[in-house]
Length: 382
Ligand code: HEM
Image 1 (cartoon, rainbow, N blue to C red):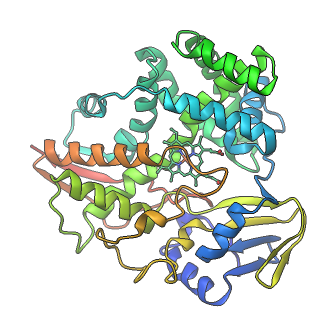
Image 2 (cartoon, protein in one colour; image 1 turned 180 degrees about the vertical axis):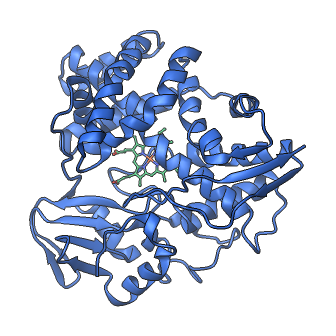
């Protein structure tokens, strides 16, 4: 039984996850030499365990800019380096100014003169990163360049990169790095942030600046795939049989988004490496073994969520999901993501009277860690 599969090749991974929760909640996959954890309890245990860390990603053949970004990202670092990176990312995130998402949506819809749209291409791939860029006052030209090219830089997170990934990463990393580096000097909190981080952690201003630039780019990277998936999955849930909600009521939409995050998360799994032997239930994960933490399975664990296979927007404890992880590496952007998806769907249903989805079978991207619709064709009329 293989625990690693492309999401594009499995119609309903939840049947498999359910079986694994029941029969093998902690499973050693001999063919891939990886542990896979499915139940809620053990996923939480691994994510909070002091000896489970982020595994290294391959940096082979990356150019100097891509290397700098990869080495500084909160998402990819451990120990003290992670503490500094996380603090930098958190300060950056808390300095995002609040902006009108509606105006970005209106421009995106205007850029497309047709009543048939691909929701994924037009909105999901653009809105999250443009929202972050605008919140940091990037100008239109730089925003356009970054929004059009960030997809290539997300490959920096892949544990193993093929020559094509490396070519794309190297191709865009210099320009994105230099745009971000030039821009941060204009931010009002720049000097303050550099002083706080460099004094507190006794690192040079040069290193602190690089940490700052990399983690700003990290916010673009992190938002790209995951928020794209949430915007896609939440729209699909709006049209799912049985979900007869009032689509112009923002509170109803927000509840739908919250349950979508549990029921149909964009990121299905994350990885850890054991830095010492870890005892988990009756098993011992040996030092240096890799662990796949299946967040999407944990979200359907009956022991945690009653009638877990039912989509129920009134579910009381759906915020206990593991979609944003838990522990030291937990996502910074939970509320930002819920807000973004709620605003986007509310805009769509308030601005177009008739909306229909044009196909039944949605194909997913060929990725192991994320379940992301490739395209969702939608017909709109006023
Ligand atoms: C629906 C949308 C999102 C989902 C499902 C999601 C999911 C996650 C998950 C699962 C992790 C933890 C990974 C791990 O423990 O291995 C994570 C970390 C992170 N996320 Fe998100 N994310 C989303 C949106 C965003 C956005 C919009 C941003 C930025 C604006 C963001 C920034 C980050 C950062 C910086 C980390 C690294 C934290 C650390 O390692 O300390 N995320 N995210």
